Image 1 (tube, rainbow, N blue to C red):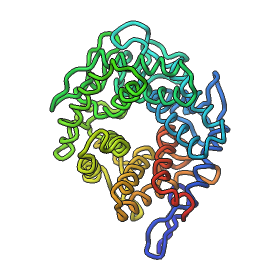
Image 2: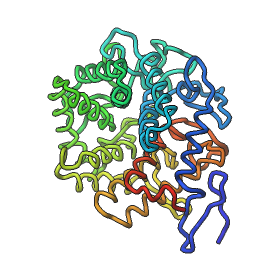
Image 3: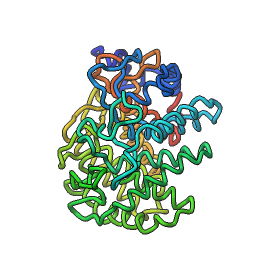
Image 4: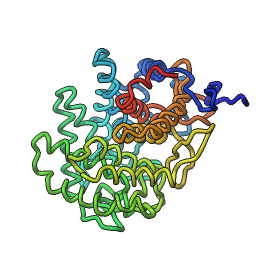
Amino acid sequence: MQHWTIAGHPAVFDALGNLLPWTSWNAALEREMQFYQQCPVDHGYPRFVYATFLDGEWNLDAHRTDTIPATQNGTGIFSYLKYYELRGGRDPRYLNTACTMGDYLTRETLTPPVGSYASFTRSTGRRDQLPLSADSGSQSDRPYEIQPDKGGIAGYALWLLSEATGERRYLTQALHNARVLAANQREGDESRSPWPFRVDYRNAEGRGPVSGNMTYILRLYDALLSSGYDEFAPARAALWRWIKRCQIPSASAEGRLFAQFFEDHDTPTNRTAWAPLNLARYLLEKRDLIDPEWRADCGALIEFVRRNFTHEEFGVTVCHEQDEDGQAWGGVNSTYGAVLALFARATDAEALALQARRALDFTLYCIDEQGRPRDFSKNAAPGGWQEDAHTDVIHNYVDALTAFPEWGEAR
């Protein structure tokens, strides 16, 4: 067999030519989590909290000062809370790190307290601005633009953090984000989502009719309703009605209602894998409580992703992000593996479970012996986008390990 190298590791195969992980999942994940505890602290925050682009030695990328605070830290809170629970709540450092992300989101990333989206979590910014300036939009956001769906990610993460810590300040921001979203919610249809992808926070002028990621706003509404905030019942009902009647059926067609999620793209027809996968994860967690047709709906969402966003590397089917990017970045490929694992467990699908494990085995190669991750396997060195290297990766492995604990030690 030809000798291959993946992200600096010699590729390991079984006798049938199937890719195996280079070490056990538990060992690699623990190395990465320990490595991130060594991150330098600036301005009161670990560097990976306020900066999006770092190399494997914690050096800032001089050419990339742009940041994605809501997605990076929202998914980071998911990861650190889930990993804290996976390890039995025995290491308070992981909970403390989640709190630093929550503190950054609540203290440094909000729009000014005026306008249609006042004091709302920003989707993009600049790492050297603490707090972010009024015109700090970066990547494909214009200076005064925000992305409503990213306020949903941040809001839901902050609600989880408030539940884990009892700290009221996190709930306060989660509740505010939800109220701003509800106040700006519109009726969706077959050509537009309940919020545009981008809006000018000053006057709610929209850009991009479809925002594919509606799941985390739905999660935020659900969470606040469970906490007794009944004011969100009508908004939640309208959002779910659109998802069920319009968005999910679009997965069986061309999937145009899953366009736009990533901060650095603004083509209004650019579909992504991230949004349908995260919707499938939500349905798998809720199942009959939300959607009696969850099996068929999850199947349609996963098949849409497999049909449009998968390719093969080293004999493994891996997932890429979007129509405009064919790379198997760590965030989306680990999301793909996790959602397949959850669906396989829920439906007792052994072949699908193996596909899930192999996709996750592939991304595990991005972690080196020191615990330094790469954002995707073809990166020449550790580091890169912190979302794809770390924050939107760890929680996906935790979900897969929750479904299949035995994968943690297997080779």
